[in-house]
Image (cartoon, rainbow, N blue to C red):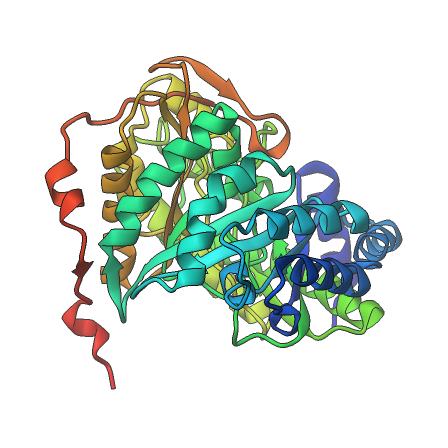
Amino acid sequence: MINKGEILQTIEMIDQQHLDVRTITMGISLRDCCHPDINICSEKVYDKICRLAGNLVKTGEQISSEFGIPIVNKRVSVTPISIVAESCEAEDYLPLAKALDKAAKTVGVDFIGGYSALVHKGCTKGDARLIRSIPEALSETDLVCSSVNIGTTRAGINMNAVREMGTIIRRTAELSDGFACGKLVVFCNAVEDNPFMAGAFHGVGEPECEINVGVSGPGVVSEALKYCKGQPLDVVAETIKKTAFHITRVGQLVAQEASRRLDVPFGIVDLSLAPTPAIGDSVADILEEIGLSSVGASGTTAALAMLNDAVKKGGVMASSNVGGLSGAFIPVSEDAGMIRAAMAGNLSLEKLEAMTCVCSVGLDMIAIPGDTSADIISGIIADEAAIGMVNNKTTAVRIIPAIGKTVGDIIDFGGLLGRAPVMPVNTCSPALMIARGGRIPAPLHSLKN
C-alpha cells in the first residue's frame, strides 16, 4: 500500500527536486518488415512504427497530466536495422534511416533508436553496409540514433570494428560539425531493453512490442543527502537506497499505466540516475554532497561505486521488472556539475575512464579536440570496451570530435544534451596496435558453463 506520507514525499520530489520520468520508450520489432527491395522495406518500417506508436505521445501526456508526474521524453526503439535490412539488395541503407526519421516525426517522439549493428564477434554484409552509412544517416536525419556493439564478455572485442568506428566517428563529426556524434554510441555488452538514447534498440529476444521506462532523480538523491551531513558512509548508502526506492516506484506506476492504456506488455524500469544541465539535477552534486570538494577529486570513484550500488539495491525492491542499464550516468555535457568540474580542470578523461569501472555505461557526451585522429578515438573505444568485457558490465563511448575547436573551447548542443568544454586527449598514438585488427579474446572468467 502507498500511504499518505509517501504521496506527499513524492509530490515534494517532483515539485522541488527535479524528479521526473525521463522517458517512456516503446520497443518495436521490425523483423517482419524485411524485403529485398529497400523502398518496400522502408515503407513497411514506416507503416509499422506509425501503427504501433501512434498513440504513444498522447498517452504519455495524459498520464503526466493526470498523475502530475513530468514525463520528459517519449521515444521509440526498433530492431537493429542491420538485421532488418540484411535481405535488401541495396548497398546504401540511407532510405531506411530516412524512413525511421519520418516515422518518428509522424508519431511525435523525441528520438528513435535502433539504427544499429551487433558486431561483437564479426560482421555480416548487412552490418558492414549499415556501419558505412552511419555518418550520412545521422547527418541527414534529425531524430535517428545509432549504436554499434563491438564487444561482449563472452565474445571478446572485435578490433576490426573498433578500428572502423574510430573512422566512422570522425567522418560523422566532419559532416555535422560534431553534433551528429551525440546520436552515436559504441557499446561493449549492449543490453536489449535500454530505454535511454542514443543507445536504445529493441533486441531480438524482446517481444513484438513493449513499454520500457527510464526514471531519473539525481536532484532527489542530492537533497536527501543534505539531511545526513557528517554521518558514516553506511548511513549515506542507506539514505540513497531508500530514496532510489521512491524514485523507482514512480517509474513503475508510469510504466504499468502506459502498458495498460496502450495494450502493450510492460518491459522494464531502468533505474539510471540521468542528469540534465539544469542546476540541482546533477550526479556530480551527489558526489560532492557525499564529501568531495569537486567531482574528479581522489575518492570520486569510491563515492560513485557506493552510489551506483545503493541505487540498484533500492530500485530492485520497488520493481520486479528492473532492466536496461540501471545505475548512475556521468555524461559530461548533460550534467551541470560535471561541466563545472571539467571547466575547472578537476575532471580529466582518464578520471572519467576510471569512474566508468563502477557506473552505468561509460565515456558519455565528451567533447575532444577536432583534430583528434581516428586511431586515438579507436584506442579510447578499445580501453572502454576492455573495462566492460573484463568486468562483465555495459560500457560505451559517446564522444564528440569538436571540429575546428581545441582544448578549452565550448561546444553547445542545446536542450538536454547541454554543452561541454573540449577536454584534452593523450596524443600518444595507438596506431600500430589499432592497425593489427583481429579480436581480443574473451577473458577466462567468461567460461561459466
